[in-house]
Image 1: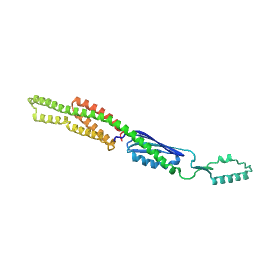
Image 2 (image 1 turned 90 degrees about the vertical axis):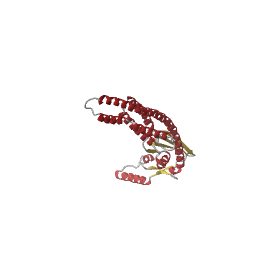
Image 3 (image 1 turned 60 degrees about the horizontal axis):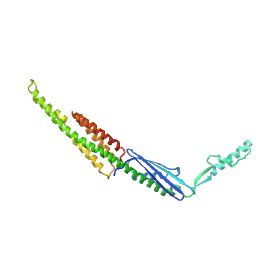
Length: 294
C-alpha cells in the first residue's frame, strides 16, 4: 500500500462535561518528526500522543493540535495564598505604625496583590481523568489521516507509474540506437582504415587497435543493462504494496539518472542524447512526486 506523507485528519470525542478535538496535519520530511500542542494543564498527554503517532506513521512532519472544551464542573478552585496574605498584612501594619498612615484596606486592594489568589486543582488530575476521551479523539484523527495519506499515495502511484512506463519506452529506444550507433561507427572506421592502409608510413595494426579502443568507448551496453535493471526495480516497488517505498525509490531514481548521464556522455549518437534529455525530464517528474511518498 502506497502512502503519501501529506494528509489531514480530525477526530472528536466527548462525554457529559468535556469534549476533545484532535487535528493532525502531515507533510513530507526525511524522517518522522512529531510535534504535539496541548492546553497547559494537559501537557502530560504529549508523550502518549507521540507514541500513538509513531505506531501509525513511518515518515513525515506531523503536527497534532488538541483542543479541550470543558463545561459544568471544571475541576479548579480558587484559594488564598495564606503566607503571602499574612506577610502583606504584617508589612502594611508596620508601615502604618512607622509612618503614621491610616490603614484603610479594602478587598479591591487585596485583588492587586500578585499571587495572593491562586488556582488549585480540586479532585482528580483532569489530564488523567480525560485521557480516554483524548485518546479516542486522537485515534479517530489518525484513522482519517491514514485514509487521506493512502488516497494521496494511490494518486502518486498512478502518476509515477505512468512516468516509469515512459522511461521504459525511452530505455528500449536508447538500447536500439546504441547498437545502431556502434554498427555505423564500425563501418566508418573500416572505410577509413582501408583508405589509410595504402598510405606510406601508416601502421595498419596500430590503426586497427585504436579503432577497437574507440568502438569500445562508444559501447553503452552495460549502461543500458543497468538502466533496465533499475527500471525493473522501480516496477517492483510500484507493484509492492507491503512496505514503505519512498527512500528506496529515491535511491533508484538517483542511479537511473547516473546511468542516463553516462550513456549520453559516452555515445556519439545525437538521437541518444535527445532521448537521455527526455528521460531525465520524466525522471524529474518522478523525483518531485517521490518526495511525498512515505
